[in-house]
Amino acid sequence: MEKITCYIKENSWLARRAARKLGSSQVAMVVGSTIYLYGTTRREFLASQGWVRHEICHVKQFRQYGLLVFLWKYIREYRRVGYYNNRFEVAAREAETNPDILLDVEIV
Image (cartoon, rainbow, N blue to C red; front, side, top):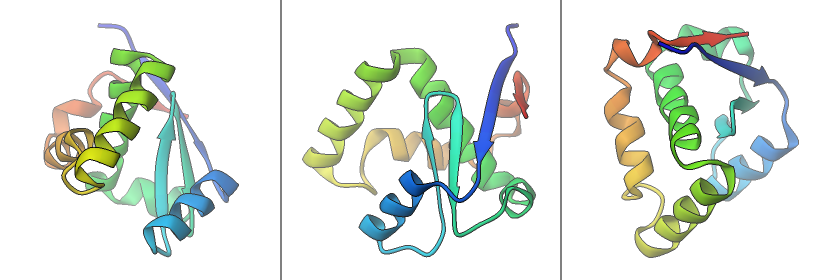
């Protein structure tokens, strides 16, 4: 099984913009294999297994579809059904309770 390496970027301007759009004080968001954080620290994020699993699911979605195709599909889905009902978010919420999603992942 190929190991997936993920990176974490704290105090991200990109995540800050997402936080404002979502009306949230804390955001983790993924682009490619990087998890961008705003309003939380690396330590706080990693302490929340459900949150980590959620974001790792998005990393795997990016890997499945590729950067541009995934972004296009995600945005199309978001516009069609909103954030909560977006099928990519539904899958990520389901992954929050699946410890196996982390088996092939290294977070650096």
